[in-house]
Length: 221
Image 1 (tube, rainbow, N blue to C red):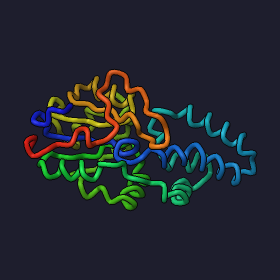
Image 2: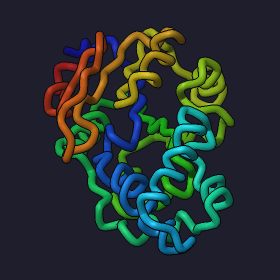
Image 3: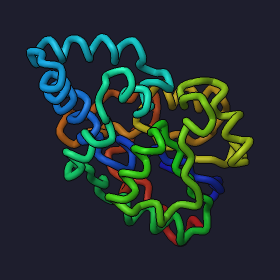
Image 4: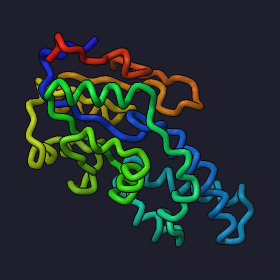
């Protein structure tokens, strides 16, 4: 599935790729409406409808991923609310073995995420998977989300890479489309980002449901 001899750099998304997206889906779709309703004295259905409008308005923008923005917008401490369900943060199966194999292969391994630095810090404290990475890059450092066509050229400025010899794995089709348009040659889509939901259609991208399907071996070093 992957010609590892042609790969020097591996970019990996975090939420839905390395970590189970159930935490984020539960937080924004269930926990937030409940706590927002309690804080503002609203019926939960009203709170959910109000939040859905906010979510739709900012989807695909850097604001959508910004915890400081949502804390200000909703008058709630989003980081503290995430702490209330922190037990749901989970590393996807095969991720530790995959990251260990990548490190052993000598390739450069970089996390490239839209997650806000505060969310990234929280999840790294809980999972400790940052130990396997050469670098962690949040789109907030660059001022644009991964969906934006200019994101990748900005990434080149802080993390130089040969796009013909780079593998990028993500669960977001708009993000993968953006990476493909930039010219990143090797792309994989995670088709089951949330373990509690059915697999999704990944279009014409090569799809995986587990990293055991693309594990590099010693012959690929």
